[in-house]
Length: 325
Image 1 (cartoon, one colour):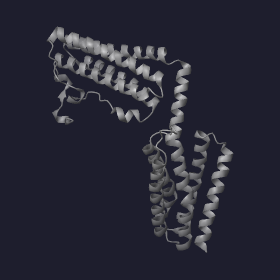
Image 2 (cartoon, rainbow, N blue to C red; image 1 turned 135 degrees about the horizontal axis):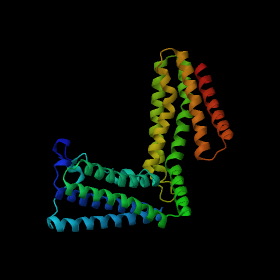
Image 3 (cartoon, rainbow, N blue to C red; image 1 turned 45 degrees about the vertical axis):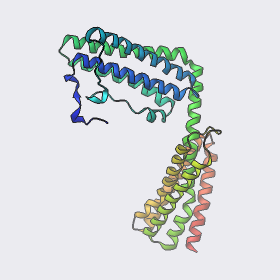
Image 4 (cartoon, rainbow, N blue to C red; image 1 turned 120 degrees about the vertical axis):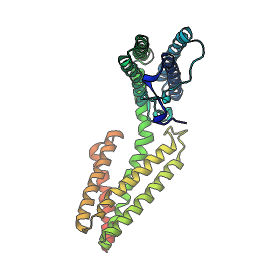
C-alpha cells in the first residue's frame, strides 16, 4: 500500500545508513525497470534492448558497490526503505505505462531516470551539513552522472546510425499502424458519416436542440461501433498492427470526436448561426483529415483534399436534400 504524504519520512531525517539503504533499493528497482524495457523491446528493437541490458548490468554493479559499502560501515542487515517511504524523493512511472508509449518515449524515460537521480543526490548533498552524509550523497550523484556517460557509450556500441534509423523507422511504422490508421479511419467515419443525419435533422426540424441530440447519439453510437469493430477485426498477431485494444480505442475516440465536432455547434440556440458554425467545423475537420493523410500516409495533399472534400460534400448534400424534402 502506498504511504500517505503525512506518513513519509523526510529525507533530512534519514540517517546515513538509511540513505545508503535507500540508494541500494533504488538501484535495484532501476535495474528491474531496465530489464523490463529490454524484454519489451527485444523482439522488435534488439539493438535498443542490448543497451538496456547493459544499463541493467551497470545498475547491478552500483548496487553491489553500495552493498559492500554498507557492509563495511553498518553490517549486513540493510534497513527496508524505498522511494515511496521518503517525502520528496523522485518517483518512477509504472513500467507498463512507459512501454505503451513507444521506443522513443522509453529512451527519453531512461535518460530522465538518470537525471532525476543525479539532481536529487546533488541537491541533497548541498543541503546536508554533515560531512560524511555530504560526501556520501556527492558520491551517489557522481555515480548517476557516470551512468549517463556509460549509457552514451553503450548506445555507441550497440546502436550505430543504421541500426537506430532502422529502429526509428520500425517504431514510426508501428505507430502509424496502431494509432494513426485506426484513428484516421475513425475520424473520417465520424466526420463524414454523421453529416447526413445531423444536417438532415437540422434542415427538417430547424430545432437546434433536437439536432444536437441526434448528432450526439450518432457520434457516440458510431464511436462505440467503430471501436469494437476495430478491436474485434484483427488481433494484430499476424498483421503486426499492434494491440487490438489500442486500435479500438483510437478508432472509437476519433469517431466520436469527428461526429461531435459539428454536433456541438447546435447547442447555439439560433439555427442559422449554429449551422454556419457547424459548416466551419466541418471544413476544419475535412482539412485535418487531408493533412493527416498527407503527413502519415504519404497521400499527395491535393489528392487527399479532393477525396475528402468531394466525399464530404456529397454526404452533406444528401443530408441537406433529405432534410429539406
